Length: 328
Image (cartoon, rainbow, N blue to C red):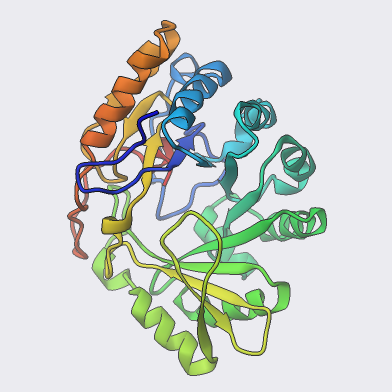
């Protein structure tokens, strides 16, 4: 069976599926004050349609799947969806990115359904600041969810932390200490520009190099390898169980090694997080077209994958689709 290789020779084996554009938080760097227009329920892919596409993608070499949103745990059939994907082939490595608010409620069912890894978005360890960033969230809900996930023994738990100067920059070492205490991997992520960027984006941007320098001044960092799907560069904290990683989509682009394709909750294939175009596969899935026709659309999306994104750090609004619908 023909595998997915783009015109730049990159093998695509990783599919990110946004299963909803709904979210129970309103993070200041993600959702504008005016809110977002959500997809109609009938326009969102159902379990059968998602599973049908995953079958095609698996036949052509996709082996790793990340479930994203919005907040995926708001989807009522999320556990059944995980089960349906796992039933396609037990070799599929399924992970999920979640804000963690509902993890305690769903962790046990998700693990039984076949979810292997958890990525939990957490941008502050201070209750008041967490509430300021998320608007509606309670830090204690996320922390108790993390404790439950540890108790259940998920293969891997990571925390994703977007660092923004003037908001949570001073908490970097707190997160390092959190990793040392819990053994959970913490990934520091550069703040990327979207149409919802905060005013003065360039002043708020912190490079991965600056984050690493701060950590290296406080602790001895040893390069290490962590099993996973993403582009983070990882470091063990010498003499501890702590591991931290840095993701640098802007200061040190990793596009040359990109191995992913994205499926939006309303049935569009997106070849790059910042691509202006997408390929609609919803009608093909909904109309019951054969797998060859769906595969053609998949290969067309791979063929449209750019060599690199063209983002730079500057103060201007980027006219892109909602991150919630694409699934960052």
